[in-house]
Length: 234
Image (cartoon, rainbow, N blue to C red; front, side, top):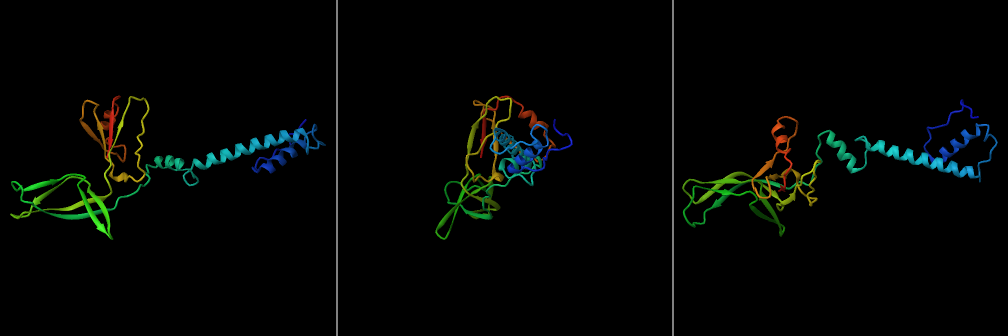
């Protein structure tokens, strides 16, 4: 019978030490008191027990590490824990410029008192023979300067890069769906999401990201619809 007063050491997690502890424990029993474990079949069984213990301890240790933000090393674990803190990882960021525009009327047709500069209007700039593309972040209105043929608008925000647009088909599902933007360099601060009513109804509603739980009732009601066939991301 085994001596119940001879505990098995469980604090060592190294494979060789686990194996040694198992042998020490078995030698405290009457059945294996004088047994020579080296080169025996029982030694192979002890190896299996030691490997099993070692694998389990390693797995649990890794799982324990990934459960905490300060010890996690996998990107998926860090993102998962960051979500609990309402943290959004940073992305690539477009260069931005705030400019004042002065536009000259070309004299074609009747001169208007103002005109619109659409969203995504492109501008180019050259530095050291390299051309950079900028686009407006939204629509702006330029007003006539006095009675001249010039129009001006101040504080126009231009973002470097090419505007992209992706369309995803949404299907009826009991679980939330994920739409992955196929571009690693997207500036997430400039993303705009529009949800189209249906394939036949082209009416679109812009999704507004909420930073907290306040004023979510209307948005939750809208997204509880079962059929949202088209999602546009710009």
